[in-house]
Length: 213
Length: 85
View (spheres, rainbow over the protein chains, first blue to last red):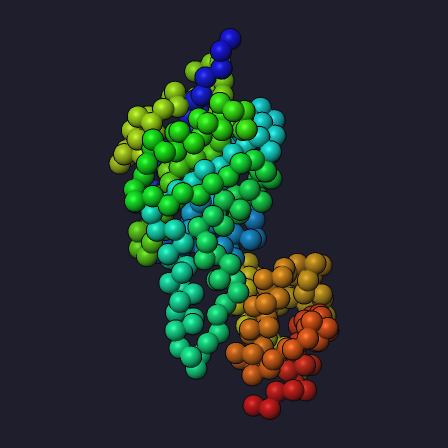
């Protein structure tokens, strides 16, 4: 039977809530996003000490991927080198860029922090997810003015069509000051719609992204 | 020396974001890297910055770094010996 591409799962972190496939898994009342992400990390009993060293962009992406992949049999979705990851946002690593800039703005107090500096690249969030889940497939981080379902769709479809990957994590991970927003999807090949919640296409990606439940 | 070790433990927890640890849970004789606290190369750089910012001490050679950053105790001994503040 012909294999098709499906959105098998999606995870949203926005407005103090974490939603997996439409179900609200966590509602926080923390005012700062860093505190919200740490509270959620503890709520889901995740054990990964490096989480506390990550910047907020990485914490956001890490948490979304953690829930997205939880319980997944990676043997079915493809070994690590057949799982791709394509993420995007508008602000790149602006949140950490600002922190780094603060540490170098005063010539008399010039002590840039190495552990802050390493996060002044948006694609580090992909690295953190890949290290955690042992993913070695194709990866790419795109900076877009806004969520661009068409671009994500075209790139992931190309990787799947050319059999560069068998499955792919894709989506939007934004962290900029007080604003944070993450919608992450898991896309995989299957012959059966029951393996997914929707056919993978730009319209469905957009429908899910625009959900404000 | 004990006060310096206690202060250093708190500073290490703070700069390395070891939020799951307490000063009491850190053995000052344990290796900081690989075993013990399991720190990595970025943590090493952060400890070098800590020595410079908080104690005015600059590690110059890699060899010196290996000796000084062996454990909390070796760091404290280095500070006590070299800190003029």
